[in-house]
Image (tube, one colour):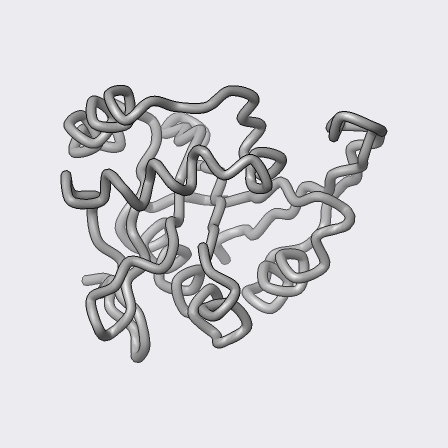
Length: 174
């Protein structure tokens, strides 16, 4: 059995009480580049999303979990997306919201817990991440968890001024 609790953080399903946190994340324009978001989300839409977030991953093809610290404060989100049961693969994304919670090992612990969940519970063969070439912190995080760069997508994203490259990283369940 996979445990979604680590030494310093734990992962849990989203709750209606997460409305303000998710609203803040989804409407922070500095983070839009990470999620390909181009428009703000209303509280109403996020509330509807949270009401439907309990949908089974096999039906929704995605799963978003809250990353919480030992004080039960929500500090980030971690996602499984493009869940493909036929090919046994999915993408992973992670975000730690505040600078004060970054570089403390929370992301590494959360990623490790989710990787275990994907391999041991969902029985995935492979997981992948799409990371901007300039996001050295995320590249280091995923690399430290056994992900390998398998390709570079040139001029993949437009940041409003120029095109940027994006790496695709992969980890095979060995």
